[in-house]
Length: 62
Image 1 (cartoon, rainbow, N blue to C red):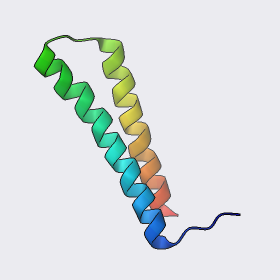
Image 2 (cartoon, rainbow, N blue to C red):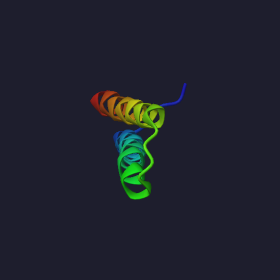
Image 3 (cartoon, helix red, strand yellow):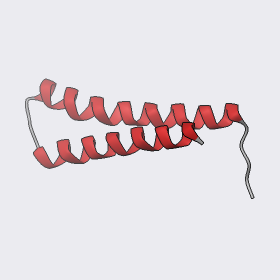
């Protein structure tokens, strides 16, 4: 069984949070700059961002 230290858990949580921020920024900033809105990509990006933020919260709570 793999065990992680508190520092490693915090680092994994931070990485997950950063991934979420990248998804969130890419679905909001890119359509604003290119002026091309594809709603299904925005919904997928927001879903992935919320998922990774939620995973980050779950990881840090343990």
